[in-house]
Image (tube, rainbow, N blue to C red; front, side, top):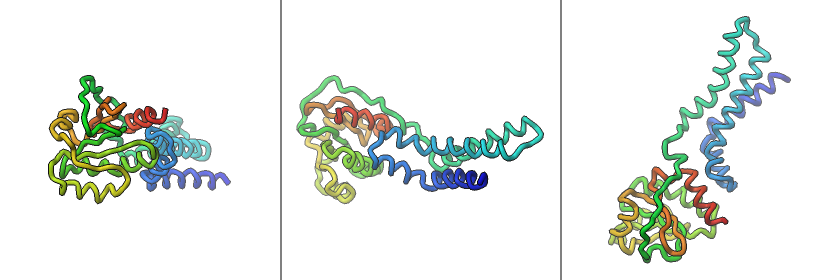
Length: 221
């Protein structure tokens, strides 16, 4: 029976490591907070590591107390270390501090919008933000999300349209120069809009899971 318990712990750790991103996505689909979904796999690996280490301490006794302690802590942190190695935490993953827009100018692109995403043609990071935005729309069906491309050429919309489909609105920016200034010339930029006026803007490296929680909390309450 005791070996079955160890096997269960090892299987949980192994599944978490190999299905790390799938676990995070499943939690996001269940509408828990973005922050919890991000940390949950790491917490699972920490817990699994300590359970395995505790089992080893009870069932594998070494003569040296020092080696027992080293064995315990070594085993305890290995699952987390492996998981972190394959799925590192980047600086912007938990970022939330954007920039408050104090001098507000009415703008056509902000009408009937809750989240405006400012992009430019041929921007890999802009394309890369689309799956997260689609998930946000799925979690918040009433949130009005619009992506604008700072260009005067309709053909620049085609690559974005192919990826977005009909999940949220896409159009050319009505005033590309003005939006580029609001974005601080950092693309993509994510603008929270209140009462048809821009309120706060996050650059791509600031729009982490905590920023998404802030955005969702505002529109849910």
